[in-house]
Image (cartoon, helix red, strand yellow):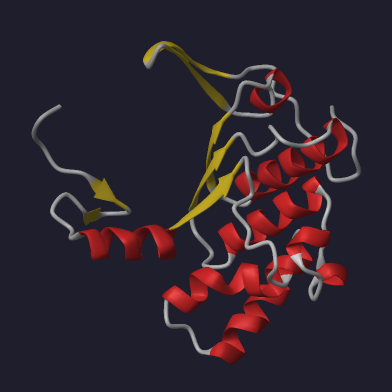
Length: 181
């Protein structure tokens, strides 16, 4: 489309400035990347608070919120470790904690299991599914069947064209105890 308006959570963002769009992305959308995008010689907690620094949240509140989201992803024991001391699964959980720090309703996850072993990938999918059950929208890009099977809806693209858009009727519900049903 070459014309029209785009609304995000009831707010017309069509004509927002680059700065306004950056603020919207920082505060209302969480991002998780295949390559983690962590600062390698920076402590876990400092990687997690980055979005809060850009949002001008007071430092004391930054660390309280970071500890809360690190607890959600099971990494409080690694809070003062440097990200280059973590496994791939731990790095992705730090990235997920960073995506959650501003309590976004939407999370974009680009191949979040692509660089992980199967056990770590399963743990990340369990966390994403749990967040979805809590009311967050998860937009997940994946080539992995097991990841797509946990979705409520799958949109398949070929060469940038939608070739299938369907609700998943046999969704694999994953529980944090590691068992699927």
